[in-house]
Image 1 (cartoon, rainbow, N blue to C red):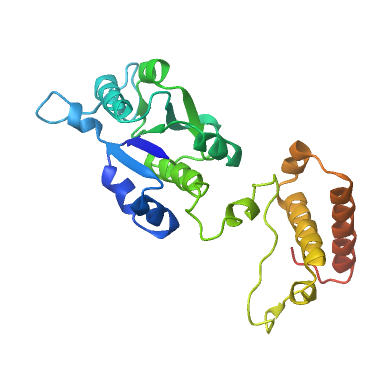
Image 2: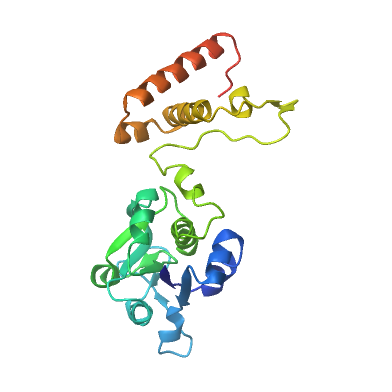
Length: 255
């Protein structure tokens, strides 16, 4: 997977990608990430990339020309047909589906904004899509770019230690992940559910699916509405609801 990032702070991108499983994927060449700094394409002695907004108001706006030149330079280094994405709070929500779709692209060009915003003419003429990682504001597009890169890189074959890891994670099947446990089996904080220790793989699969359905119903019910349920899943979800109601009646449910 080849990705280019247009950013005023390229070192921020490089530093973050030097660690963890994504860092190893970059080191092995499974994921290639390079950065282009718009300051390299400025014409004045101060290397200015921003200016005051027309119409007044607070903050500064990233100028069109340096951004445009940086995007063209970055696009020249990517395969033809690569998608250009601006990372902004007003964009479409980036989710696991978009991560999977991005993996199939020839390449991906991410533009990280800064300050109050960027010249709208740049978005209109140079950008294919705008993506948002959530309904909140961060100081710049570098962190969203890193989130996007990480989510996509995890799907690249060989990035994760197990090929099943990416398949079994939250959102991969439209559900949140089930609870996880490890040693010791008993602790002052509680015991590991017996089903996970017994070795019955069919029972373990059923328990995990039930807990994933229940957790999604509790925390993100809209996901279930979009996804839909088959007969087994409806039965398991009803089991979860009944067990939770029974625990709640006994004062045991703290979720």
